[in-house]
Image 1 (cartoon, rainbow, N blue to C red):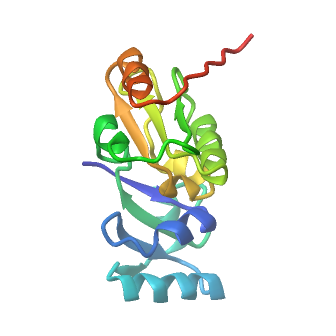
Image 2 (cartoon, rainbow, N blue to C red):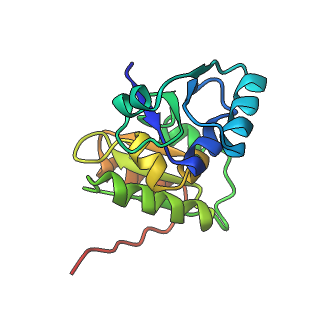
Length: 174
């Protein structure tokens, strides 16, 4: 499992208290924000390491004063069938994405999904951007609150969703 780095303060703020994903906080600055992050990391049991700015930038060229090293964020574990069992579908929305390969676009979509209280987002295992640090940063950290499920076959996923009682609507560019 590879590690990735978050440099956006907003994304760091969303993940720093999650010791199951946050591996260590690298700090090179002395701002009040960096001190707050370091205190929160220590309370959550996340190691804090002071490094030079050059070392910080060797991990991520966009880093200015801190980086959060996180475990790979490919997707939320779980299956669509288990997600659907026992859900109240009256006001529930499931978003199915196909061929969204750009991490910035996926991050923006997940940010919107969080704001509109989407129940879960379904993406294919292939031909799609995985949920990575770039996606988390593009979502301003809010992607961590969205359930993302990867499915091998989207046509079968649509059928499963319909069988659970959901109405399915489709949109296509053009």
